[in-house]
Amino acid sequence: MTYRQHPHQQSAALHKLVTEDAVGLLRGRAGKMAVLGSEDGKLKLDWVEGIARLLADPDGLEAVENEARALWEQGIRHIIWAGMGGSIMAVRVLKQMGFGDASAETGITIYPLDSTDPAALNTILQQIAQAKQQPLTASNSELKTLLEDVMMVGVAMGMTSEEPITHLTWFTQLLEQAGLSPAAHLLVMTLPDSYLDRFARAQHAPSRPLQLDGGTGTGGRMSAPATRVFLLPAALYLSRQGPTAGKLRQVLSKAWNDHNLEQAMTQPARHPFVQLAAALADTSSAGACRLLLNAPAPWDTLFSWIEQLMEESLGKGKQGVVIFQDQELNAQAADFQHTGTLRVVLSADTQPVTTTTHEELPSFMLHQPYLASTNPLDRLAAVATCFLGWQLSMALYGYLQDITFAGQPAVEAYKAGARSLRNLPDPLQPLYSWPVTFSEGSLKLYAPLNVIEQATPAAVLASTLKRVRPAYLDCTINGEVFPELKDALAQIVFPLANRLLGIPAKLRQAPADYHSTEQSEMDGPPDLVSLRILFHQHEHIQLGTYSDTFLLAQAVSTWQAMIGQNRQCFLLVIDGSAQQAASQLTGYLRGVVQELRS
Image 1 (cartoon, rainbow, N blue to C red):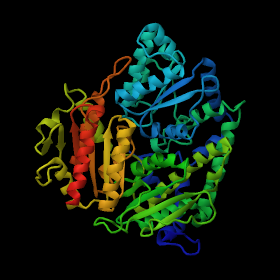
Image 2 (image 1 turned 180 degrees about the horizontal axis):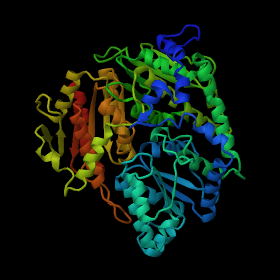
Image 3 (image 1 turned 60 degrees about the vertical axis):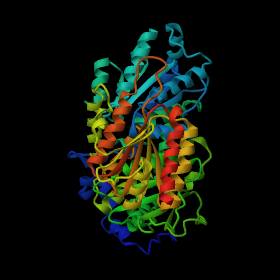
Image 4 (image 1 turned 45 degrees about the vertical axis):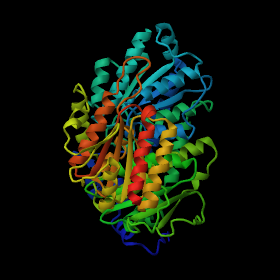
């Protein structure tokens, strides 16, 4: 069944949006929208008209272009962009879309960094060294050659993010060892008096406001396209296209026109993203909806950004929209649910997309003609337009379900927990006294208190899946793993969920995804089972000083926080590294499959 909204046949949700002028309230920062869009009594709605304000300012966008040009003229050729969640997600999208790579002769390459695993830092160092055809050694002279054209940009759009501080500390030590001035190789963008801001002031690191007007009314997941999180990488890319003056303005002007917020207010029933919000609300059950996203390449790179936006904003009070990459679910399986699920297909075509799968589920065709753009500047504008549209749908769904879409209060508990665990000699210490533990060989499974005793760790998880009958399965890997292992996990986890149970699955990577979807897993739709995986050993840092302490602390604290919320969450700790113990992990999951089939 294809969900196609006709403007003269309004659903209850669309009728409510139209008659109550929800878009007008959003633009006017008024009424219920002002309440839902506020955090701690402060409006967080600057993103709604952010592009319009930038276009009205005659100098701001050109100033960002000048900043990008100045970095090039300074000799910077590599930028390590350190941030979590909304501070980096848009940068990853731009990188994956081809807007963040360049040769040293043509532009500046961006390396997103959102992990506390030393392996992630090693990978970036290796990539920079390889680009220079230089060995990765710790001698001061070679370290200076390696880092002399490298800058780290540390970004935090929240008050309590600490990961970028650990990255900046590590990088500063390397700069000092190389005899380079940190002030010339660091840049900080954050909120006033945040943890990162305090660090930057103590280190005398140069800083820029996230919003060009110095405001603080934009939440992290709404950072694109109206803050420097989007504007600076975009300007760096545009600087390769010849004289840059006015190009950023050109891109944003097209994006704002294509977004057409005026139509969303005056003719809401005809705006695709207003229609999408209504379709999600119509499909939802008790305020919760599962969204299966089908997007053509390269637009499938938007998935993680959309996932973070919707889940961090709306995953509250057992409500929200949970985002999945499109999956074919077995409608004959015991846990298949027809209700509360909507398949959304992104399409540049004016005609409906013909599909042959998912006939059991309703689908919505999201028509976006600008996705067909081939000109690089138009494609960049299309990315910005997508960001704007999904933000609108998110706010309107929140309006329809009375969800406060500003803030992400649930995650503060795990952040505080990780902070405490980092100060222990062993961050895993709380696990050793946990009363519900199941062991087999090198595996230890830490389970919720209400599990039923079983003979093996695999049987424990399988029996929980049978008993709980979840709406979805989450499998989260803490830290970096090699691609072959991630592929092997996907080949087990998705068939397990999709075919045996008839439910969608997520395969997440932490800590990055803790800043993207943990709010929803902790406080959003409750019917999930989550398996968190932690290898006990990790790579040592190749240059400088950086340990896996924070990574271990995050793995434990997030599991503790989920248990505290009465969620069905398991932590599987495996002795050894991912390279050493990969077969034990895949063997465990195959054991779960066998138990489910028995």
